[in-house]
Image 1 (spheres, helix red, strand yellow):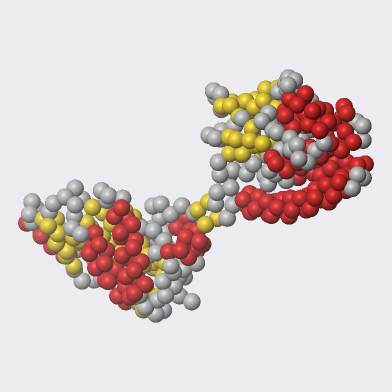
Image 2 (tube, rainbow, N blue to C red; image 1 turned 120 degrees about the vertical axis):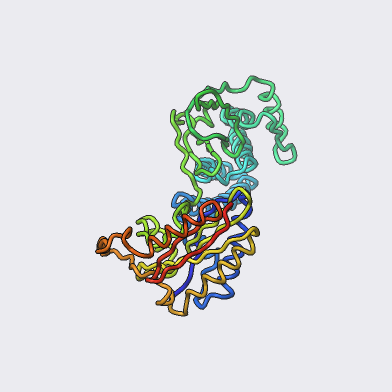
Length: 403
């Protein structure tokens, strides 16, 4: 089906807000008056969007994590029921399995969930008379979150006393790791706990982690940057160079492609982008404002199927909205339901197999129309600017008042 698309246009004005005004007017006028269906600006924008594969993979991973997290929550509740039933060996086995699985949900994991698992592991070890292991898990809670407070309603007094004793002791020392990245902002999480990252000179960042910790030493840290996929690494293996992958969608650039071609051959880039849009008829335009605020606007249609352009229409004035409206009113007259009206096509066809144009047998400086133009231009010098167009065999002049 033949459709019209307004992708972009050339613009040279004092106020960039005028570009939005022009687009709004020409899109509205085209939709109302064009005999050919016009693609909406939203549809054009969607066509020009290149989906980011990294983000798509990240979204799939997040969905998987959400499902896995829900499963681990259910497993934790079941392990708690077994613990309350005094089946401590079986409960500990389940708690251990859950703790090992925390690295599989790094972007979803909440600190409260990690702390819940560690509390129950400590208490279970104490009931199994493994005080050393219970101390390690309670220490891990405080090494992860120095402000952590154990729930005295859920755990026996000996565990509360042991926790108070450990809280008064020195914390496990953290080791400084450095890495370089070109990201401007970096943040980190460790088992759901926000973790400080320090920015240094020359794109160097520092992070202090409990390397070698008996409980936390093998766990993963989550590093994130703005509009980028996170980097997940075991804390002892944080890379010295980190390249964050963007998750932003890309967009085909249209800058400088959709000015009036007149009878010039379109660039390969223009054809590539226009074919991505998928419309058969493309709007080309230029809106230029001079130092006095006057606008000169030109427009043309281009048929992607035949690789032919229409004649150029133009409009001048001081008010951008009026100029844009009048220009489009003239431009849509060049269209019919099948595309560009045959009589509105430029005489010289633009095609992939076009041959170089033959020079006329009579030099242009020996033709009557050239010397007539020269005479008029000479007589009018200093009064106004004269523009000569010769789209047909007839002589046409257009007079414009001099600035």
